[in-house]
Amino acid sequence: MAKRIYVLNGPNLNRLGLREPEIYGRTTLSEVEQMCRAAAPGRALDFRQTNKEFELIDWIHEAIDEGSGIIINPAAFTFTSIALLDALKMFPGPIIELHISNIHRREAYYHHSYVSKVATAVIAGLGANGYRVAVAAMQDLLGEARAHPA
Ligand code: CA2
Image (cartoon, rainbow, N blue to C red; front, side, top):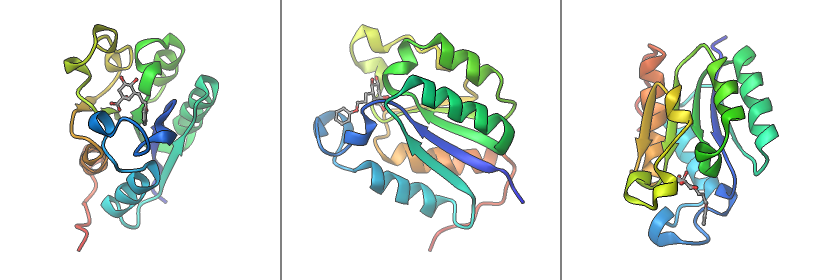
């Protein structure tokens, strides 16, 4: 059986669609999850969110054993967490770093990503659609034929 694609989300993203729609849009995280599943029909996909840094790191360790690829929106941990960087360094497969907003158009403290140092690719600024793009790109990176949703 094919290994899973992990879609991991960091702190505060459980509030997506409920606050700051001018930056993050109106799509909720549960709708984002549905978009990801629709973009990878029949594919084992783990979609998770946590506000805890250690939990995100534990999930990356799990993905090292059970995952084929990681799509990660680390939110604020992007800019602070060397622990996250160290965990991702151990992952042998493709890693897509994803941000809903274009972090480079924003305040300077959003400009330096530790995660980009180990990411295969970075997607930023496409809104919630970025997740759909990331799931499609991940399947391409994994060399899988993509099912086209009707
Ligand atoms: O644009 C993104 O996806 C971010 O990763 C989101 C993070 C921010 O720290 C990054 O710079 C860019 C913040 C997530 C906050 O989530 C919210 C969700 C709903 C309402 C307000 C914040």
